[in-house]
Length: 265
Ligand SMILES: O=C(O)CCC(=O)CC(=O)O
Image (cartoon, rainbow, N blue to C red; front, side, top):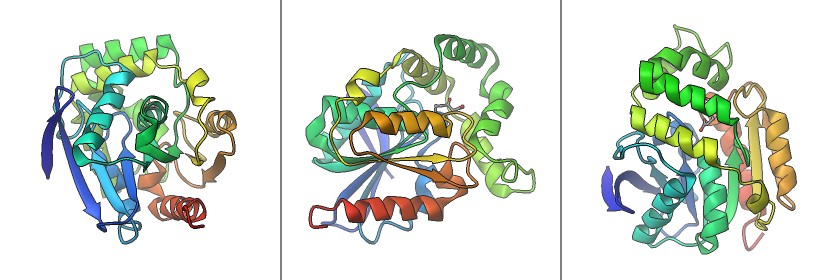
């Protein structure tokens, strides 16, 4: 467990994997922390150096007062990579983590060599969607809206009270700080990366669960269409978080993309 104050906020992070290997940096979705990647990282860490972190207000990272901008999250990650002396990494981002990855590639291009964009988009949701969600979380708490969120996150088969993983990830969501969740809601409301993402020119893989209720396959296909040469893959039997529901398939897609886009491939 490591903590560092960068860009004015304490960020919880971990570095694993194999020293000297290419670096993969993982960025998480709204209401989650870096443990969502455990099943994927376990399949990649022999061949890569792995950086995991919790964005501000999530996991064990500090919750600064809301609102946040996407640029706050991007600058936090850039400062963390600066602290770790990392450039030219592959950034693997899920949902808002995928928007952070797109922002990092745009505003700090020397930090990024490749992108894996999971269940994300250049623009997620509408002003009304985010204003309503921010208001609900601030007045009633995350638990009050968790049923709807979990329906978008997971397939019906996963959402069984007998599934210990489902109970555990529900706790991860509801224990996220209100400032972290609502603060990042403001960032999502205000971020539209359509124009900047369309200028990106780097190897990119876009992945989406076939049952994703938050960033459905057609939206992620549109994102892939913005980035020249981007690959698009659908993970079967997964909702918004294929890294949790289908870690083996998700890791296999990422590993194949990394192998085929390696400098010596
Ligand atoms: O998951 C994210 O990072 C943003 C998209 C979202 O709001 C997921 C959900 O529907 O709850």
